Image (tube, rainbow, N blue to C red; front, side, top):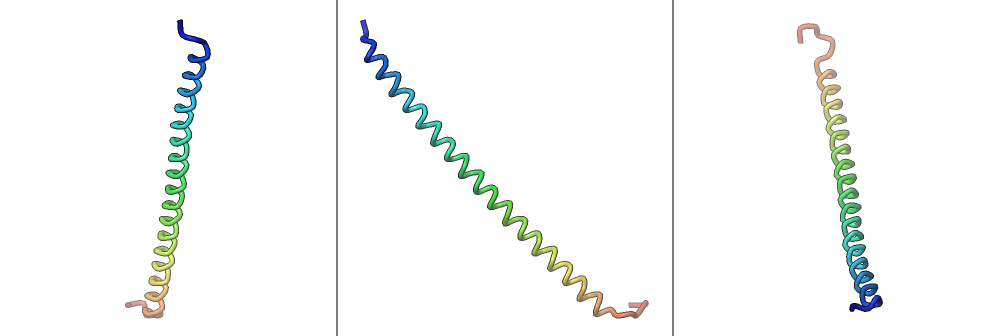
Length: 71
């Protein structure tokens, strides 16, 4: 017959290993979320810069045309 202490030790070791893998998985998910947030922030900054550039270009073109209705 297997002693209860041996079963308890094996169960504890198995649970420790399981929790270690779960912890690593959570850390990986947190890092992935961090990277996604940084990427979205960079994309938003690029879109804002493009929008400002487009507005400046349109304003410059409007100034060049002047008030000539045939331009």
